Length: 222
Image 1 (cartoon, rainbow, N blue to C red):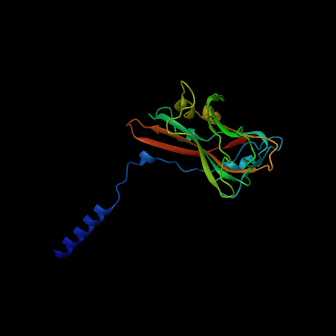
Image 2 (cartoon, one colour):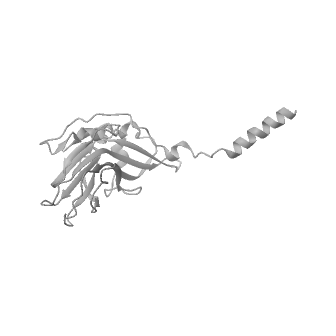
Image 3 (cartoon, rainbow, N blue to C red):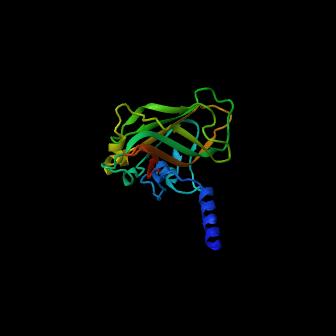
């Protein structure tokens, strides 16, 4: 009897001290399952742009930051998560960049910027954009991150994100374009090393619970 009581007290103590977990879908991050880019860029503006689709921290897409450059990232594979009848409502779309700069030119004038525009299921860029006007766009030497968009940014008026993402054809078009503008004629020409471009789709399910899913681009070109 004493042993049974002690075991019962031990179990009760462990239950009391155990963390309370929210329902799985409340923070329903879906793991990245690997992919490869279908295009590798043109004109050597970007070197190895396909590297932003890799699930590692060792291979980078690089670009010389002099003038205006852009990188188009699409086909994030969201149709493997969303379906037409899943009852989810998209509440926000966010883009995350990781990487670093190798130099910083303090003589650059104020027309420096890094800008993101979303791409919808019809392949159209948004007129809404998120812009970073600080220099550098990503940290110096040590890898860091920068976010464009937020938990409530839908980028398009009258958007149909759920319809775009739950259809394999339109989901392949969904993505983002990164525009970089660096003034020319500075003392140095920094190189940007971009490790990854990731989109986060935030949603509520039919029960009103919030969740999100992350994916990396599977098609990248300049």
